[in-house]
Every structure is written in structure tokens, then in C-alpha cells.
Length: 219
Image (cartoon, rainbow, N blue to C red; front, top):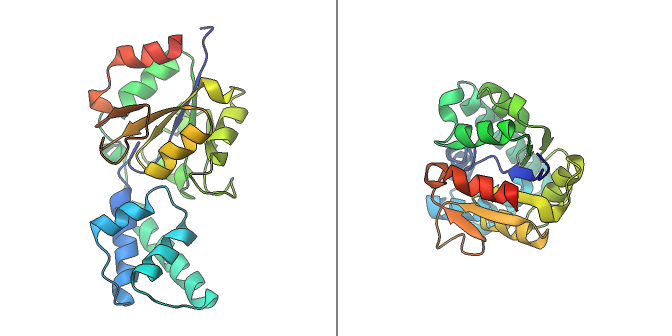
């Protein structure tokens, strides 16, 4: 295959639905601080770092806190989140994802993960798809959060593919913006209303035709 591309996947909400676990963990912190934290508020945290997510929640409740308290809550949030992941397995993979990964592997395409999550590897291991990824760039490897394109640019670089030949799958506005800023093809997974800045938008991977992926490879 001469037309080798870099297919870069976000993790939460794209490959697995761990967003629900993030919500539960953040909600627990918010409740302890008497902050009303809803699913609508949770949209503000998509694609955002853990540190910034806490700041957003504190801003919602107009709560001032010391760095010591913030550090304590960040640790607590991650511990609660990880406790929800203990029983994860392949059933957590979102519909249609496995089919796309198999196709890309068969076509000898570069496959990468580009996620703000610092728990990406254990999640991929638990769901049994770690071996599909040639490169993993997560929150441990970058300093700038999306919409800065650092995580995607680094993934493409490690695959030795130019940004113009990279395709990014994202479910967050910040992630789509990061792909666009990085001059990559952006594919939104989710709501057309929310992800309207993406070049292509699909409700989920089941609504994505195999021929569409092949056309991206052939470009």
C-alpha cells in the first residue's frame, strides 16, 4: 500500500465510553463541594485535561481552593475513575470501532491513539485492542491540552506521516479544533450541532461506510 496514512483516534467517547466514568468521578467531587454538576456541564470537560476540568468545576460553583486541596481532589478523582475501570472488557468498545481497526490493519495503515487520558494503555489492554495501535500518545506525553494540536502532531511524527496525511477521529469540540489547527482531516464522532467544525461528521462508527475509509486511504 503506497498511500500510507496516519489514523489517529481519541479514546474517551470515540473508542470506549469511559466518559460516563469520568462524569461519575467528577460528580462525586462536585457533590462533596456542594456544586451542582450536570451532564450538560460535563460537555465542557470533553477533551480537556484533568487539571483544567477541576478548575472548570470550581468555577461553576464559584469555589476558591488552595493548590493543596486541588491536588488532593485530583488524586481522589483519578482513584475513583480507576475504580470504575477495574471490570472493563471488550464489551466496552463502542459499536463499529473494531471493524474499522481491523480494516486499517489489513490495509497496513498507521494507527495511533491521541488522547488527554493518562490511563490510555490500561484501558486499551483491558479492552483487548492495544496491539492494534502502532503509537500511543496520551496525557503523560504532552504538555499542551487540546485544542493545541501537540498530541496529534506528535502521533503523526512518531508514525513518520505528515500532518496533511493524518486523519483524526474526535468526539469533542477541542479535539476537532486541534485536528483542524494541525492541518489534519477531522472526523467528528457524535452530534452535528456540537461538532460542526469537523470536515466529516458521523453519529458513530456504525454509520461510517467502509468505502469512506478506503477513500481516505486512497487520497
